[in-house]
Image 1 (spheres, rainbow, N blue to C red):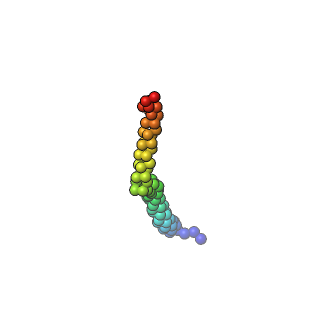
Image 2 (tube, rainbow, N blue to C red; image 1 turned 90 degrees about the vertical axis):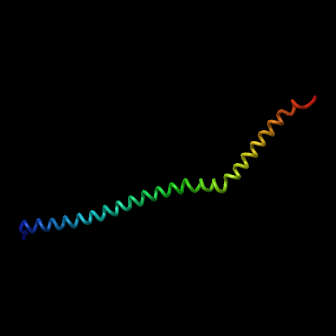
Image 3 (cartoon, rainbow, N blue to C red; image 1 turned 180 degrees about the horizontal axis):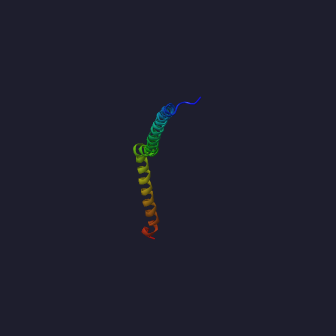
Length: 90
């Protein structure tokens, strides 16, 4: 039992239209997932770089500066001690 050509074309057009709508829905989901993935990666890298910087900036910078100043003072004192024999009177 074959359908007349007009009905076959109409059935094929309806099937094609249904497949196009389904395909469009899938493409929209894929696009949404790609956009979400992009912004998720951006946020991940901002956090990955930003959190250690903020920890350093607000909690560790002052102790590191103090350690650096102490080291510079120690280096200067060692340099003065190396010059001590030249300043002795004998």
